[in-house]
Length: 460
Image (cartoon, rainbow, N blue to C red):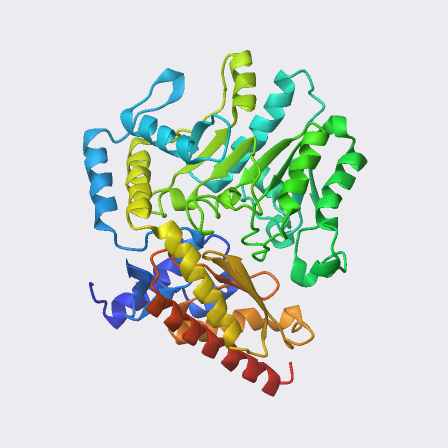
């Protein structure tokens, strides 16, 4: 690794603050403390400009499934860029890598004869899906079916359509008016049930909320329901058994499309290739949205798959007049194919299932007073941080307990992300070993306990 002098480090930090507008970051904190500059990654570890190496607990933004520093992915990108760096897929043009990737992905999906459209990421995939849903009903002679039902705390992206579907207040503030026709219901947050229920006496009121919203809007106006199988950025909400199947039944009852956002969950993160492959989740969606793990972040690629039902309407119209400059980019498709090959050859889906169990068990065994609930599937996990584990009482939201945990974790060798509501995101690369996950648990437990003791001592 190249080393940096103190002078070079300070110059980098000054240039960052002066020239770079960061995504989803506090400008105040950056101007006060400067950026955390990462210069290298290997396996589950990243190294900062100071030379300190840490475990990446969040796999970037939920996406680095095969880990950092995979030379074979760089090599395949170079080979494809040298052979054919770009050609558009508009106007009927194609190339071998996009054909091979479409075939590969289509054959993996829990869908009826899917056709695959490519994007550059999750927000584009979600926007494409909403356009597809509305377009489908327009072709079918029902142009009033435009409303799309999402959920509070959902995260579907930040482009105009995706932001309208997103149910996180902080992301939406100041960007109004949002795209019309998007409506939200309460999520399946069982630990803090918005309906005041306990799981043992629950009748899936969170799923019934979708039907109530359909009836409120009028079934003749509702195009689709959209949801992440496990809600990621909103808090890692794992739905109870039967929840997704009940919503699919509601969609069928009222002639709505079911849109499955697997941008985070897809390509092995939940311990199955797709979350909908889990028996307690499994429904067959009409449209699926994907990104992130399809390339493990080595290059931006996303995808949208539509079922035979939806594609037949497009065929009826004669075409789908929507696309992005980089739809089906040759280099991106080549990298995605190699990335999926690595996941298969190294049994990373199975590893995610196995290691995820060890991770959750290890965190629960810590028995910390600030850990209210540990939940997840595979390697998509969250910790509800609390003031009192027995009652579930939270620290005051303005106190910043989750933020303090991430700060201590950085000092102890972890790159940790705090989600809304003081929930820690625990989603390391799928290559993580038993020994590494035990080290992660040890460091994280120490970080949570230190932050907790500080807050109690300060009377917060």
